[in-house]
Structures are given as C-alpha cells and as structure tokens.
Image: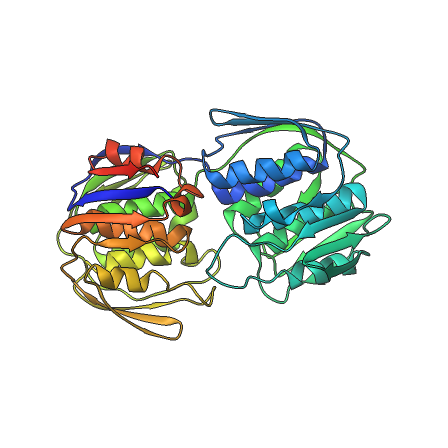
Length: 418
C-alpha cells in the first residue's frame, strides 16, 4: 500500500485547479448504460473510483469505453449479461448506481450489495422500495439485489429521507419508464442537478433535478451526447481548509463557489479571508482562526464530506468548537489519528468537541476512508515534523494527483510507493 509523507509545517502559495466532481461523473458513467450512441464526458477526474466504475461498465458490456486525459468516451447499445459481480462492486458503493439503468434498459438486473467504505451502513432500502412502486419485482438473494420487470411504469413516491444515490438511481430508471414519474423529498445536491442536465442532453424528459420534487416523463430511447462534468466542490473545500489551517494564501481555480455557500459562510465566520469570484476563490492569510460550531446536513447545508477536514482546521482555531455529524453514524474514525498528532478532541456519540489551538506534531497515522485521508493531509501540512499517512489508496479514490497538486503549492509532500 502506498503512503503519503508530509514534512510540516508547510506554507502554501500559488494556484491550484480543481478536477471534475467524482460524485457527479460516477452516476453519469452509469447513465451511459441507458444510451444508444456515443457518450462523451469531459472534465473527468483521474481517480480510482472512475477506474472502478469503468471496470463495472465494461463487464456489463458497454463498448469502447476509454479514458484519455480528462475525456471519457463510450459507445452505448446492446449490453451483455446484466450482472455486476461482488468482486467489482465491493470496491465502491457507487456501483449500486447501475441498478436503475440496467432494470430500465434490460428489464432485469443482478447487482451485488455494495461495499467500499467504512463510514456507515448507507442501506439501499429506499432504492428498492421506489423501484417496486415502479413495477419491479425485487429482492436480495445470496448478497445480490435481483430485480426484474417487463417495463418500468411511472409512479409517484416520496423518499422517506433524502438520499443522493437513491435519487440518482431512480431518476435514471424513470427516464425509460412508461409514463410520468414524480419523485418527492429528493436530494438537491449539485451532482444530482448535473446528472439531470446530462440525461436531458441525451433526450430525457427530466424536470426539477436539484429541487426536492423531480418529474420525469419517460421516453423510448436516449441518444448520445457530450457533457462537461461540474468541478468537485469537496476538493475545492479541502484546498480552502488546507490553506486556512496553514495560514497560507492560495487561489483555487476552475471551481463553482455557488455550490459551497454554507462552507464559505462558515470559513468566513472562522476568520478566513476569502475573495470569491465566478470560478475562483482566493484565500488570504489574515490572523488567528476562531472556533465555530458546525452541523453536517444534506445540501445546501454543510456537507458531511468536509466534516473531517473542518475538524482538522478547528484544531488550529482559538477556543472550543463542536462538530456534529448527522448524516453518517460512523464518521469520526479520523479522531483517533488526529489525537496521535496532538489534537484535543472528545467524542460524545455523534458530536466531537475540539479544543484549540493544538500544537500538532507529525506522526504515523492511518487513513480509514476517503475524507479521513484528506483530513490527515490538512493536519499534516499544519503539523511540525514528519507525518506519514498509511493506506493512501483511500485518497486516490476521490482526489486526482493529490501530491502533485500540493507540491505545486509548495508543500513538502511525496508518495512512498509500496
């Protein structure tokens, strides 16, 4: 397993360009299963989850799928056996996104229950319940979701709780269903909006993607299209917090500040000086940080995917901050590693109390998931001495060329190859 070595503390400077959003491109890749014709996705990030999804899609028979630089092309059409096996799906929870497209396109699907992350159960019960309302016969057999139907029928349903992958899966299933589907209490994340844009470019009839009510009028077929993937708002937030934690001034380019309203407001409240443009954010070093409480919640509120990085930032702030996690039940596994670096954090259930500023010192630490690994990079950049982050494959799932980007900002960071 590769490791990341950081020699801190680091002062960052210069500009960094954000890659395409991992959480947008994965459902759009799955949507290629619905299409007759050539799909071209641009601004595709060079991350392991894209590679994993490509393996799943090739196994399902999607032809000519190639990634060259940041461009992905695939040729839709006749597919193979609609089965996504455990050996592939276990690597990434987002693999469940092939369920809706396979059922809509081929009338049957056999998809392994997903794996790939340790931050919580994230059950797919909501996906299954909604597909049943659309006429699917569906159950779980020997660790696989097994589903069939003659043709999905439009239906009206409301998700019991907001679910991003559930919203995306059902939106993709509905585009080839017979009649109108009305989905309520949908996730409103920008990645859902981007999927709706892509589906409509292919000829779908999706209205309201990015709002709590999505209406889909089914069509008989989708055709190929080109689509530009939105920038990754979580990568953007990670760079902003790394700059703030190290008292640095940097420019984050090619981002969408409007997708980070709650995050930017919280950073300003902490005392981070920001200049926000249409597609860039400038961080200015501006004195000590203030401790500010945060509660994670679905978009447009503060994202759970930036909770760990924010906690690392709060170890550098004056005072006591309370970080409350409401989205996932097991997303404080980075706390023990931050403590190894000198952080003063106490956890009570879904709440972490952070006392700062802590004199962080470099230490050997272990990444437990994707965002925890980003948290440890933020902490390592601010800490005195050498930090070695084990299990670097976690960061590779969602951050493209992470050490190169930080090196170009002046960080003393390198990858130790296994």
